[in-house]
Length: 80
Image (cartoon, rainbow, N blue to C red; front, side, top):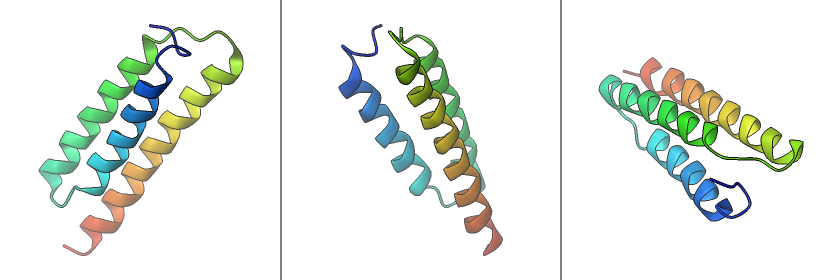
């Protein structure tokens, strides 16, 4: 899949990942979110990037998603 042709799908997957993470309340839901982030990574791996800017966007996006998951999980489970 080409990054440029599928930019709307990439942005949609990114937004969905954040929505999944924000909706988590239990440990099981966080485990599901971690699996979802792994699927996002596999999806990103199948994209063909034309330049380093596109590749860096995908790398930064995935790092951001993982950081948000880690912080949200830590914050949420701290109060349980």
